[in-house]
Length: 143
Length: 143
Image (cartoon, rainbow over all chains, first blue to last red; front, side, top):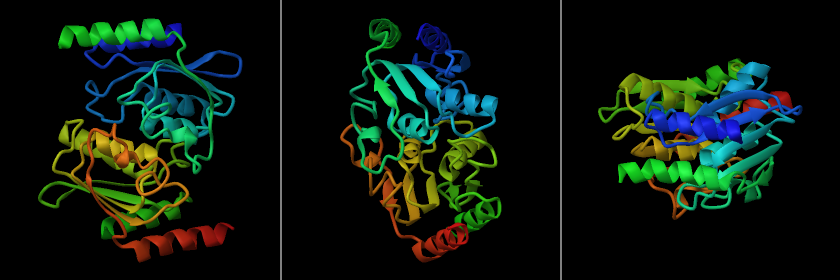
C-alpha cells in the first residue's frame, strides 16, 4: 500500500484526483503500478486501477490475473470493481471508503450482485488514514 | 446500429464474444467504432464500449463526450456503464438484453444508483433481433 500511496501523491502532482494502485503477484512482487491519469491522458477510463490492470495483463501476457492482488488507496468505483472481477484478481485491498463514488461497499456494490461471476476477497480501510489525508489535502487546495 | 453490428461480426471472426460499439457526435457522424478485443489484446478491460469511449476521447481531445451517443449491440456491463457515465455520453442505444452480465437493466444497475452522477438517456432493444442472432450463432458453434 506504500507504493500505491506514492502513486496517489504523484497523481496529485499532475493535478489528478490522488488515487494510486499497485498489483502484486503471489510472491508479493509488484507487477504494475499506476495513478489516475484521466486529465493527463484525456481518458475518462484512466483510473489508477484500470491502468494497473491493463499494465499487469500486458506484463503477464494474460487477460486473467489469478493469484494476483490489487492495492488501491480509495474504494474502487463500479467500473474498476467490474474490471477487477473480469481480471479474476484474488484479493482487493483498499484505503479510504468512497460513499459518493464507490462501487464496492457503496452504490452499485458490484461484488454483491448475484450475477457477479468472480468476487475477490475484499479488505477495506488498509492505510485509510494516509489515503484519506492525501485526498483531503488535494481537495482543500481546490475548494 | 448497423455499424455496431458490423463490429460485432468482426469481433466474432477474431474469436471474441461478438459485441460491437459505435460513438456518434451530435450530427450523427461516427467518431469511433470498436469490437471486443479481450482475447486479441489480452486485456480484460477491452470491451467494445470501453475501446470506443477511449478512441472517441482521443479523437476529440477531451475526457468528456457530451452530446455524443453510444450504440452497442449488447446491454453494457457495470464496467462499461460506469465508463459511459464518466464520459458524460448523452444517449445509450443497446441491442440485446444481458440478464447474466448486464449492468444497466440487470445486476449492478449502475444508472439507477442514487450515487450515479450522470445518467444517459437509455434505449434498449434497438436492433435486438440481429444482435441476439450474432451472439446465438457464436455460442452455438462453441457449446
